[in-house]
Image 1 (cartoon, one colour):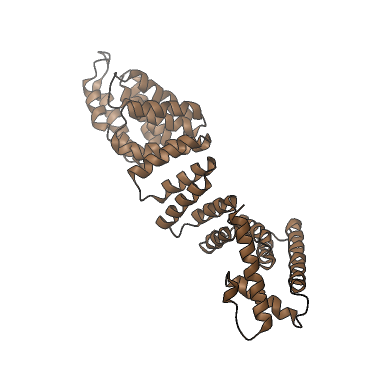
Image 2 (cartoon, rainbow, N blue to C red):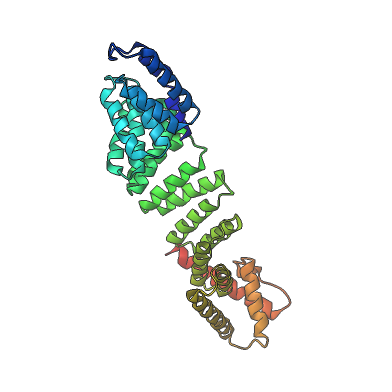
Length: 359
C-alpha cells in the first residue's frame, strides 16, 4: 500500500507538465482556475487527504482538461478511500487514454489488477497482472508485484503458479521468511509435504519467534505422520503467544492420537475455561480421563500386573513422557517401578515413531 502511494506520487511531475501544456483544453477555459484546482488536488493527495483531493480532481476533469494521468490520480485516491468500484472506471479510462508505449501503462494495469483483486474479480485481476508484467513493470516494483500475484494464485488454489512466484521471490530476496512460508504452502497444495517441511524449517530459521509458522509446520508434520514432532511445534506456537482455543483443541487431538491422555485432558480443561459450559468439551474431558485411566491399567497388565505399587509405575511413565525419554537404555535406577514405567514409555514411543515414519 505504501509503495502504491509513493509510485503514484512519482508521476506528479509528469502530470504537472501535462497540465501546463495540454492542447485539448477549450480556448475559453480559464487556465489559472484549472491550475489552481490541480495544485490544490496535488497538495491534498500528497498529504493523504484523499476525499478532498478527489473533489478537486473532479473539478479539473469536469473542465474537460483531458489527461490520462488525472484519471490515474483520482483512481488512486478512490483506491485509498476503499471506493474500489469507483476507482475501476478511472483506471480503465487512463489505460484507454494513455499513449502507446507510455511508461505508466504497466502501472495502470497493475493498479487496476490490485483493485479487481480486492473486489474478488480474480480472473480479470490475473489478466491485468500479466499485462502489467509484459508492459515493463519497473524493477523496483517486481517484489511487491510477485507477492501480490502469489497471494492471488493462492486464493485460486493454483499451487503450481504460486510455487513459481515464490521461487522468483526467494531469488529476489532470500532472507524473507514469508516467501519460504508461501512456498511451503504451495508445496503442501501439491502434496509435496517433505519439500514443504524443508521450506517451513527455513522460514522458522529466519523468524524463530513466529507462532504462526510453528502452527504451519505442525500441520505439515501431522499430514506427514510425524505426530510427536508436530506436538512440539504446537507447544512452541502456544508458548510464543498463539493461545486460542483452536490450538488447544488440535493439540488435544494430537495428544489423544498418541495416547497422551494426561496432556490432552489439560488442554481441554483450559479450553473449557475459555468457553465455560461447552458440553462438547465436557464430554471430551470425560472421555479423555476415562481413556487415561484405562491406559494406566493396561500398562500394569502389560507388565504382568505384578507390580505391587502400580501408582509409582504410572507416575514414572508420565515422568518419562515429560522428559521425552525415547530410549529404554536411558532408564536406570534403584526403583523397579521407575525402571518399568520409564521403559514402558520409551518402548511405546519407539513403536509409535516407527509407525509414524512408515505411515
